[in-house]
Amino acid sequence: MTTFLHTADWQIGKLFGQFEPDDAALLADARLAAILRLARLATEHRVDAVLVAGDVFDAQGVADRTVFRLFNALAGFAGPWVMIPGNHDAGLAESVWTRALRLGAVPPNVHLCLQPAPLTVAGLAILPAPLTQRITHADLTDWFAGAATPAGLPRVGLAHGSVEGLLADGIDASNPIAAGRAASAHLDYLALGDWHGTRQVDERCWYAGTPETDRFRANDSGNALLVRLDGPGAPPQVTRLATGQYRWLDETVDLQVPTDLDAALERLGGYGPADVVQLTLRGHTDLAGHRRLHDAIARAGGKARSLSANLDALRLEPTDADIAALDADGYLGEVIADLGADLRARPDGPARDALALLAGLLADDRSAAP
Image 1 (cartoon, rainbow, N blue to C red):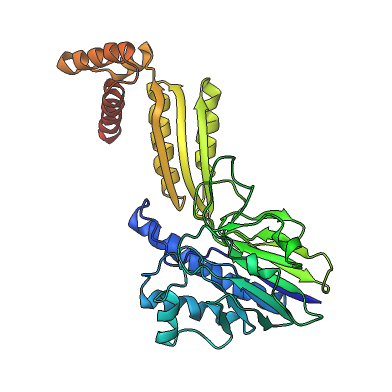
Image 2: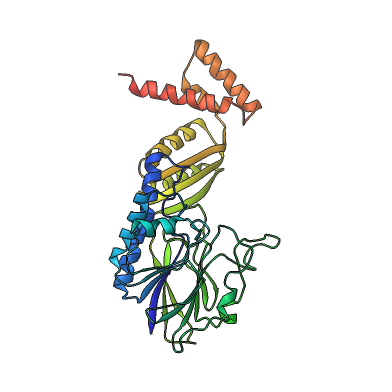
């Protein structure tokens, strides 16, 4: 029996430029922390090897310090690590891989498969299909079928790309991989990278997904796969292992009735330090509800790792009681009346934000008054 971890798409060095700098730095560090967890899981499960199916690095130009940090993070597992380049870190003539070798950063137990040649390690005959450029239109796994490997060893393919037929009709994928490649090449398992979610393609072919979620998509990311092969020809036994730290949540809240506001406030109150949230609020609310939402968003933003709230589709519908509660007379009262009239005429116009801002300022002034 042979066991190994299948992982991919580490994207070390990813910058997360759409986030605030503090959040971006922590999200980048979480990717490295996921590698430490992978090493620990490999040791705990006593696997024979760890197979990494491409995109170890997010770009060729990552800093030397990042290269050293990545390879140092592997120290928690003393067995063999087998890696191939993906589309983000393709094995060019001069690449992040050649730089890592030149720096002396690669430990002796790390096997960099920069050429398509069989590798025998840890009781496995591994057939790698490294990307030697970012985009190819040929199937780099074609050679697997004719590759000779030692008798009695399980044949495991290692590749990075898109299995044909998985994308929507009419969409051409770069770096294609033939459907049914595991069967046509007599593989016991085909370990794939490129898709960032965990996905089974067929009985012997899986995408591991990224070990640390990095986008707002419900694709079962944040995992590695523990694979057991009882021998050549035996079906693989595959188990998901959770490796991710952060939950990326893309949520929409529709406010139509008063109880919807209470539900939205409860949801905002439930976010915690492991949550990266993209929240859209739509529907309608009165001034008091709008103020409560803004207060709850501010509090939730202090608890979540990151919270982005979009209120563009939320209509502000102040009631007569809302306007009266502002308790303003003179010129300010006239401004409020004009804003209310403009808002009724143009619900999505600038009066909405102006009235909400004015209501907030008046509420703050009153709360600060002795």
